Amino acid sequence: MDGLNSFGIVPYSSFACFFPEAVKNFELYRFVTGFLIPNPQPMQGLMEMYVMYTFSKGVETKKFGRNFPDYFFYLAITFPLMLFGAYFFLPPVLSLSPALQSALTYTWAIDNYDQKVNFYFIPLQASLLPVVSLGFRILVDGQLSFLLALIGMSAAYIYNCIETHSFGPLESFFLAHHGNATNRLGAGNNILRWVYSTGKLQAPQWLRTIFSKLTGNDYNSAPLNGGIHVTPSFKQNPSGGRFNREKRAFQGKGRRLGTKED
Image 1 (cartoon, helix red, strand yellow):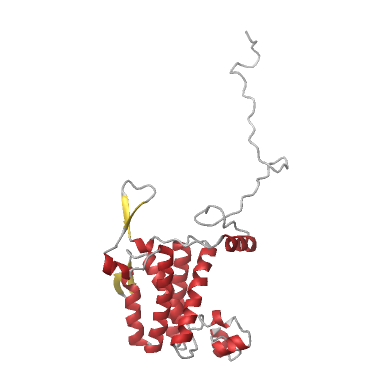
Image 2 (cartoon, rainbow, N blue to C red):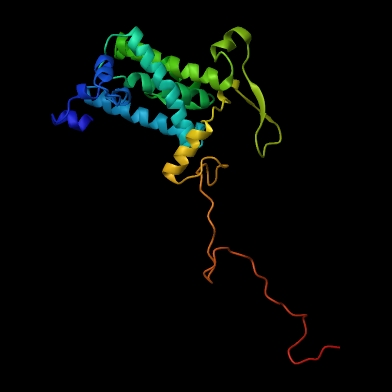
């Protein structure tokens, strides 16, 4: 989209999420492309696209274990929430990318709350990244970008409440509910995990089936090969048969060649 706009082929306004036009002309693609329009300033736009890609990949690979239906289901929940917030609480905007970037940042930060990250060369705890990025938004980009980021973070917060069956991290300030003891495979002791980072909201069975048929990967079975779901297939043996059956050759009784049996 950035290249099409730069060369004057298709302007950003053709991708923007303008609700009256999208509904009236049945241009439903605007509800998705509106989140992908970068910042008009080249350097900042490039940085935002890199950050969005990095956190999106981190959420899909680590939180959802490369299970694309679960990641798609996450977007299917957060996108309508962000569209609802932008429509009712903000004037028409060209780009909704700050909302999506903020949602991905929040979800990644909650899942990696105990890691150290660098925010513009400033080291800090990952759990503080959403708040720091919000403050950076209002200082650098202004009020509208801040409100968009706040809407995106709120959508991700609601998703976290749904997947953990709780009121989210703000609950910990009032109820002192900070962690949940869970067993980690191969560890001798219980590993204390922040309860808000342990939620798993799986995609419905029908959605997994659709993506399994479209991609050829079996998302309905247990993950194999580091989270990549592979449809089991029969192995062909050298004789051309369909099944690979194990055959054991006759090994004899241990006598030398030419001797007689007693």
